[in-house]
Image 1 (cartoon, rainbow, N blue to C red):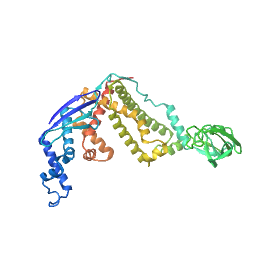
Image 2: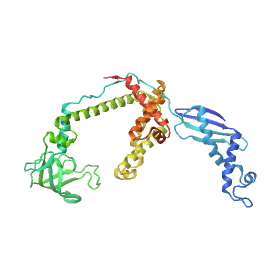
Image 3: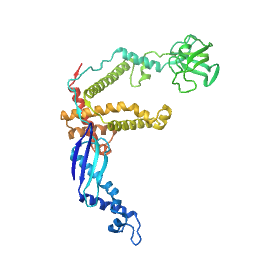
Length: 426
């Protein structure tokens, strides 16, 4: 088999492949053995029709397509390998010549992985996030826990933000009550922004027994199209006002928040320790992300549309899997969001392009810096995953279908750590 590769504009190129007459003959033989089993000829058992008679009745050309289905995958794969190219999309194949007893010549228009021109990736300047945990941050967490454990108690004072007002209400547009606009004994937390914008604020200052007209305008994007953008009046009666009674910050409160601590001081210490670890991990991850994004932005890459489409496919699949974990699927999402697949893919396209840019950049850096993945690296990662999923390293390897995917992941991790080690961090 002979192969000729011609690089064309951008990431396109043309493979011209000549398959020997012997390989064509083998393909035709296999095609005949397949086809002859599917035809009935008087005087012959099924599958026993002589080849010469078949070609006389149907012509050898009737075997060409089946023969091509057999020959082309193997021939194209070897041609790609011989040419040393890396296709990123399905080829566009055109048969130039095919005859019995003659070589097969075909061309394949191929889109290949783009060349990466690296910019600056060593010595990148980056500021690391602050990891210090302040007393104020712990106070905020304790206040949040206080609010979570607060009790609602009836109050006679006027409504303030944070109170819960128990209300009856009915909504009118052009003095006509509209469907779904009424409620009785509805508990509304003021400041929760769960009602139409402007509604809750107008109840501040009201007391139990007060009746009030609340004037609002429905948002233009309101889910009920017949109400979108329209002015409405809600006739509201305040039937009860409840305020939050916060628990004291004492040892009993601490034990209710966390049964493993013996008092408020221990709770503060534990919150500080947990928060410090969280901030440390966030700072490290943000640092890595920032360096990777900077290196990718500094690289020049003409990314083929096919690679963006493939990455968008992957993102769409990942999104569908996350929806399934929440008890939904893509069809339901399209119904609820009012989007279709094309609109969702359009939203994902820019992020998909960035993902491809990052992946190609890290791959190019790893190659330039000769960052190798050792067997020890793979075994360490397998053991780590085995401990995480309570599986043996061998079972993890089998589940992954080998170690090639894992090897790529480890190489990328090493490349990111290389960027961190060579960065100027302040």
